[in-house]
Amino acid sequence: MEYPAQKIFTISELTREIKTLLETNLYYVWVEGEISNVRSPISGHIYLTLKDEAAQIKAVVFKGQARFMKFKPADGLHVICRGMVSVYKERGEYQLILDYIEPKGIGALQLALQQLKEKLAKEGFCDEARKRPLPLFPKKIGIVTSPTGAAIRDILKVFERRFADVAVLIYPVRVQGIESAKEISQGIGGLNGIPEIDVIIIARGGGSQEDLWAFNEEAVARAIYNSKIPVVSAVGHEIDFTIADMVADLRAPTPSAAAEMVIRSKQELKEKVAAAAFQLTSCLRNIISGKKIFLHRLERGLIDPSRRLKEIRLRVGDMADRLATAMSHSLEITKKDCRHLAVQGSSHLWQCCAIQRMRLQAMM
Image (cartoon, rainbow, N blue to C red; front, side, top):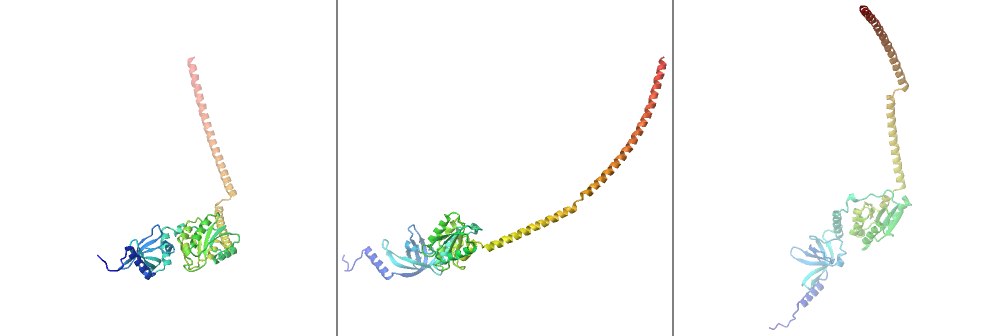
């Protein structure tokens, strides 16, 4: 059988033509759809399917791009994506190679923040029960911040004004950019390895959400959580709030406020000592006054010893007189009894003698 004079493609050639055609005419496209079938194998790539009511298409985010994504793609999430249409020749399937994904209706950074908050909350990172109080009089303070930023200057000014003799150890890091989160985490870990540090401050000045994003990274949150030393988070201005603020033992609205929280002012301490001394003095005065009243009541209940002795002497004298009278009366009775017995005894004796005399006379 003869075929018309036309080019006959092999499967590989046809696939290659389709691939060239698609990648040439649809080099970059924006698509909107719902994510499903998300997979993240050990390779680091992210595989997913984008779909709407009538169709679906497979998509992939390669490892190099995936590491820059702020949020984690999840099934059911509605997104807007940018990518290149390509063909996977081995299976003859077309797919999207994505380099940008943004949740529809919510920014990628905001979604990433929400996802990480939920994850850390489930693991107990934000529990108030695990947060530690700051030492009352720290001797050595570690600070993780940029050595050239305004934050460190503000902190040192407060320290100098309050206590010039406090020891400060600065761990220099970048507080913005791709590697900043890694450096901040290493700084917290590094200060934990130095003995006698009482408290750690992580600080940076204000900025946009993107500028402060390093303090929203999971690595920084875990470094704070695993710190054996209490951590104060002083990131941005009062209106800024980061993951680091949630996990830290104490959140300060500004770097200057963090310094004031960590180091008490001399005047404040003097006032507290004076107040404590006043309370102690008042308490002692109340105790002494109460004891005086108690002693006065006891004193009123006591009898004068000399008066008591006189009463005893009178009672003894009275008892002695009564005893003498009783003894005199008893002696008179005894004398009478003795005289009576003597009289009775004499009569009986004469009677006995008379009887015996009569017996003797009879015998003679």
